Image (cartoon, rainbow, N blue to C red):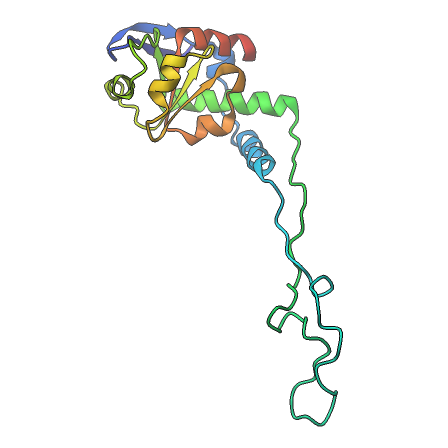
Length: 206
């Protein structure tokens, strides 16, 4: 079973914690992670882009000039794409970008993302994040102690002190075990868990 160091709030190693082989020690499936991240980004798109085609713009009902004899190129409408205020060729229209991913693939992708963090040495486990006050400098001090500048902090449940202390730090985000996503795990350099959040993650994905 894989082991990682266990840190206190001061960033000093106080021991080791054993990780579940089923969650943090599987063979990494990059395709599953790619599929889930692709679906996450696609489902985040609003799909509200829209432009008018030549059939939808106003005006242009009359032929600008006669077909022959003017010396100019023939034109049928002033609302053709080559005209100012004309319609757009192949204009984008509102659409749904939604993608569905199989539950088993989602679980495999999550386990692969967690395992990749362990393999890269980017998983940090704290005994607890008992910050004295909801101050940014307190959280920065804790993160610097474990060399985590761009990090995703996963909490077992909502913690106002930690959330407020982290909210103004660029490159740091807090989330809950229940809302943890593969995209966020891969987006941030370091993944930070507490012993309690680690236990919850293993309970959910074991």
